[in-house]
Amino acid sequence: MTEELRPFGKLGCLPGNVPTNLKMLTYYVAGDLPKAPVAVPVPAFSPWGMLGNDRYGDCGVAGLQHGFEADAMITKTKERFATEQQTIDYYLKYTSGQDSGVVLSDFLNYVRKHGYYDQKITAYAPVAMHDVPTLQTAIFMYGFAYAGITVTEGMQQAFARHAPWDATACSGAIVGGHCIPVVGYDDQYLYVITWGGVQRITYSAWHNISTESWAIITSEFEAAHGDGRGVSISALKTDLNRLR
Image (cartoon, rainbow, N blue to C red; front, side, top):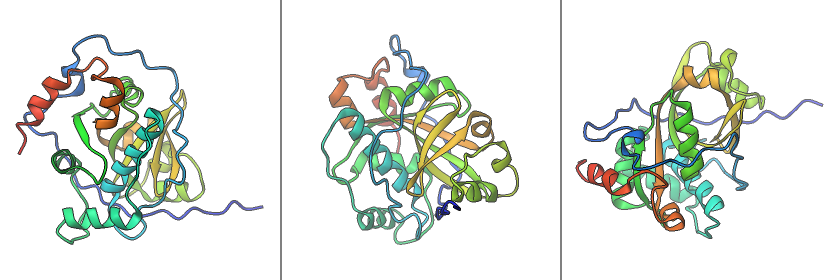
């Protein structure tokens, strides 16, 4: 019996940047970070949903909402999340009605200042995109990492077949940029949420396709743990407050 193909969605992650005043997450380490375990399972949230990413390039908004949803499962927080239409509405409000995609760092700055419906970002910091140990630590400490990647036609086809994104899938012509939350990992794969489902990425492929990644500290996580789990939130907030 042939496995049903999954529909893949649209792309909408624009080329990013790290603001001048903001430093890598490791700069803000104020003590001993908790040791990340060998594996972090994907939170049992369902359904993840497309959140409009089948019709719009709103992956930057949908990806952040999926991160909030993962956080809620980890912190055992009962929350009300935006509907698909509300996700689209937030995206189009941010882009002034244009389906133009988002620059992740600019969008994070906006959400930190304005909130996202019932959810809030306390702080965020970039993680060097090929620093896998720190990326795993950020996932373990804060529930997810918010990341940008390049996507190839092979990756779209692999997603449709429920196949992992490996070196073969990631080779070939790039079709655009995409935003994904990384919500789990083990010794073989990073696990991300995209286009309404869970997708596996091999570590070799990650090094080829990753363009940026961000550790996100949500208000729910700060409330649950009371601090940055070894990261100085106060120092990080001082630098974030300098951003326009």
